[in-house]
Amino acid sequence: MPDYKSPPLLPRLDPEEAGYLGEELESLRALVSRGDALATAGGSVMAWWGVVLAVTHILKALMAADWLPAGLPIGWGAAIIGVPGALLISHFGRGGYSFRSWRNQAISTTWVFAGIGIFVFLLGSQWTRVSEPHITMAFLAIVFSLVLAVMATSSSQSWLLGMAGGWMLTAGAMFVLDSPIDRYIVMAAATVCFMTAPGLVLLRAERRAQPKMRTI
Image (cartoon, rainbow, N blue to C red; front, side):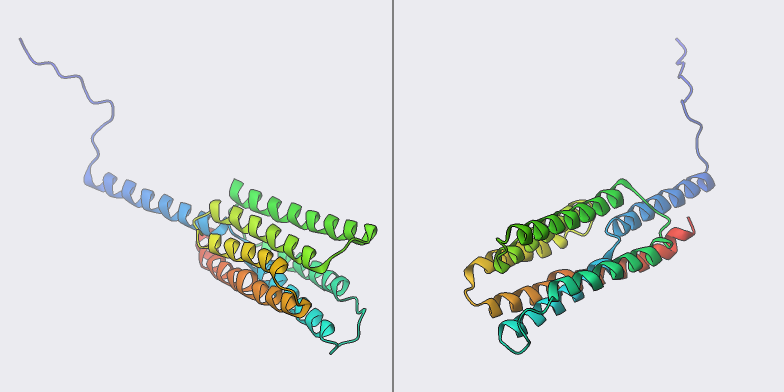
């Protein structure tokens, strides 16, 4: 009996077409890789808040050491300077992004609600007059740890888990340390190491990825 073979479902590819598909796959792979970098977009805002909070806690340490007058509204000053600065950075940086994904949206939403939660906590503590500096700093550290953990698991930046762990250790240190000065110094160092420095690294990754995305 003659051997009848069914025709292939897809036509054979010549070498030129196969090479073209290979280039397309490489472009897609690069797109996904750049998407991982841009999934953590917002490094500039993160670095900005790291600087603001570091300076804030250094000033509070100086105030606790009686090197500055007591009762200075340092916390409110940080909010007055930090919030407009973050909004300006976000506004001028937003125009460069040509890639938005569910990961960008998730991380942005997490930061927004983290900020709202911190604001509600601080306002409620002041309203009920049960504010304790070490509890407040521990709460901030835990919130930052959770947000960084979300950022790490939503992108390829797994090293952010180390930063999240650093914030969790900082939260524990707020309960272990007895001196208010030591607590403020540790908190200032944590903001530099676990917020400012990672923010600058992410900002560099954004700038590397963004020009390539504009050509797609």
